[in-house]
Amino acid sequence: MPIMSTQTVREDLAYLLDQAVASAQAKGLLPTTALPPSPIERPANPDHGDYASTLPLKLARSARMKPQEIARIIADELPRSAMIASVSIAGPGFLNFTLSSVWLADQVTRIVAEGDRFGAVDLGQGATVVDEFVSANPTGPLVVPSGRGGAIGDSLSRILAKAGYRETREYYVNDHGSRIEALGQSIYARYAQLFGKDVSVPPDGYLGEYLIDLAKEIRSRVGDKYLEMPAEEAIKQLAMEGVDYYLAEAKESLNRMRIFYNDWFSEASLYADADVAKVIDRLRAGGHVIEREGAVWFVSSTLGENKDNVLIRSNGEPTYFASDIAYHYNKLVVRNFDRSIDVWGADHQGHVSRLKTAMAALGLNPERLQILIHQMVTLEIDGHPVRMSKRSGNLITLAEVLDDVGADACRFFFVSRSADTHLNFDLGLAKKQSDENPVYYIQYAHARAASILSRAEDLDWQSADVQLLSHPSELALIRKMLELPEVVSAAATALEPHHVAHFALDLASTFTTFYTQVHILTPDREQARARVKLTAAAKVALRNTLDLIGVSAPEHMERRATDAEAANGGEPT
Image 1 (cartoon, helix red, strand yellow):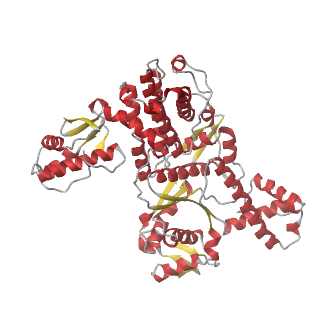
Image 2 (image 1 turned 90 degrees about the horizontal axis):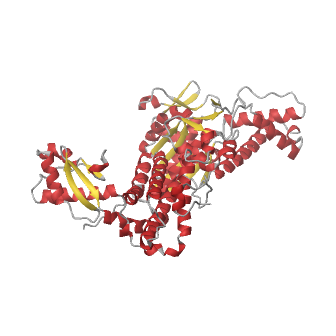
């Protein structure tokens, strides 16, 4: 058997195909032509095998041979592998592969031995990635869309780490600029009003009731301190009080979702260190900056954009775009991350192209910057969606939703759909303790496996003969578990964590089928030991999959046992 260094069945099969073609070419059975990537797919009909390849069809034109003939040659030259039970040729030239049941059973031992490492692949090969997500302006409590961005971003970081990347999680703190000034003015108005002063919230300020609560907290702590100093100075200090307060609130909510950052990067530091000015100077040196109408412009229209963009306003204030350029230059050049991944809300869609253009103008490969846009969330309350707005004060905070349904439901539902689709979050479904709720269903499968292992402590299942695993539901469960590395690779490549959520549900369903179709704790002791070992492997796979999306894997859950469940030793409690 050839030496293989890959970690997924799909990659191993592709490797064997490449070896077979190389052998056939060396023998003159196939012409020496450029070899396309070996496509490995799953047959639409599982009766046709576990995997299929269209490589003979892709080689037919350049080889000037019939696909069926190429398929026969490749099948004959395929290196022997304990993984493959049979190879068949179907249709116009498909190669269908059926995995060996002996080899499949052996994988149970490997999965158990790998434990937390199961599912890992070396796609990233140690490349460094900074993953920046949420980064909401600290001008009020985090709202639900920020929770979706947090779940997506943190899940991506977990997936990338499992895929062999060295990832850093970062929150970009917008603690500089006009919105922070508006926050200070809004807090000052609410604070002054508590002392009977006639001060109005500015037109571009924040009207939410939450600012009144903050103003009361400040009054109880410092009294009328901020009325005894010039208003301009009070506004500045209150703005920083607000930033600190809402950042602390954000950290608390995000920590409740099991989201922890390596760095909280201050926008203000870019100005303190003159990074914004340095980047503008670099753009100017490259001929990408002009002065017009009293402002400083990035002439992005000469680089393919439909308009130029202001870097410094006519009043001398830099724009957010200027600090965004400096921030990403800091990530990709100063700190020299191989890639930067930003997870942004839908309202930032228009900024993607211009920021990538700025990176190119600075001499960087814009592909090093990847921006993922997630769409909005609609919470259904009493069958009606609720609008959320920091400005109007009509909002539902992330903390309130966490109080209502918990972190696990939030995280799963937030990543259950592709980021580019709108999410309707059914709060009623998220709280159900039944199989209708996908979070409950998956977690219960893990708790069920844990219960079986607890009841089987005297079976010494670690040394079980896994070759006794031959029931279709047993082999189907092994096949499903072996998909995890492929799912990790696909999710990391496409930056799509929803694939993991879907796989978690499929894996739980496959385990449940196994559980209901065989008697795990059968009187046949040797058979029971083998099935308990398979259960232990399933527990590993379920736990590792849930961990990739930050959902807990409980050891105990309560539920009334069905007849089939009672036959397998009762239910976890």
